[in-house]
Length: 441
Image (tube, rainbow, N blue to C red):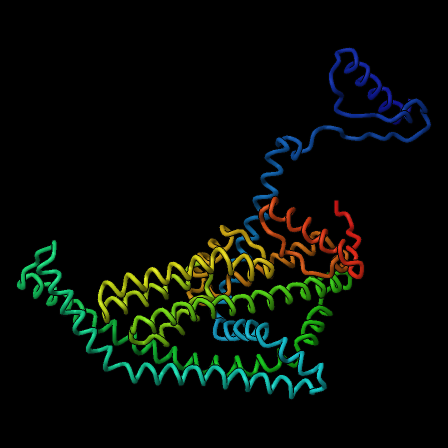
């Protein structure tokens, strides 16, 4: 008997013994063993080391190491952004300004103006508008500074009188002690104040550098924005170029709508609060209105904080009655913004859940301070549009209604009501039939 026949006989004996004891065999032997002249095929069917772990543990482990890689990549990205913040922040500001001014530049191009000249005219017009407003605000501040100083002195005296004669009943000795403690604390931290002034000077240099970088970047974004985006998309793999380009197209329209809506809401806030301050003869009404306008670019909390500054100035300069009146005006303007302007103007630009907005602002402030709070919501709006589009149209086809996704209300009932209203409106206009919506599984 040859060695091959001996191996076959031993394999048959092992299989027969395992079958008689109803045990799982360690090896599976193919039907070729029936043929004594065929080669032996022995396959090890014993469990591998991966099969020892439960499926849930293997799934959790796979998610865990991918999550760790994601966290590490995010941390490294934020570190790079922090190191290049002097460059990245001006570029981000230029993108927001380009979203604000791009429709004006595009209109000039449609009227036959060359792209370079159109971008230059819009840039110069924007500079004249900004510097004209700043000069008016500075002149108003300087002209009312003496009056404000006198009223502040009177206000401090009134506060001291209230502290001594009010419910606290503080004596002059206690007031002098508190003033001396404040003076001592300032003297003890004089070194920190000096270093802060030095760092402020360094920051001023960075601001000047960033200002000119914003100007140059904004000019080229207005002139060559579409070409720059096309060039970046061509760097991607071929199958990703069209979906990415179209997602960027819709995201840009969302950003333009968001910036324009934010400017309009901020203008209404500033005008409302500014008129109230002017009627009540609060000093620095125009600078405070400008502060409210700038603060309104940070949704939810910006106008509230700047309104609190206006109330404080009114308290120190005009007394508690005027301060309470200013507070009522600020609350009324905030209610107008929250219940009328935001749903009417901002709701069609981008639909984000209020919790997402609050968390985005909080995360942006923690990561990048005021600048982070400023860009957190527009960044979230852009990502919302891009992700929704890529999920529903991965191959890069346009949306059925040619509108950017991500503007649907976050409330399902409200979204359904708006869809029914739009469908009824389209049905009444024979020249504008409803589009053929494609189903997305």
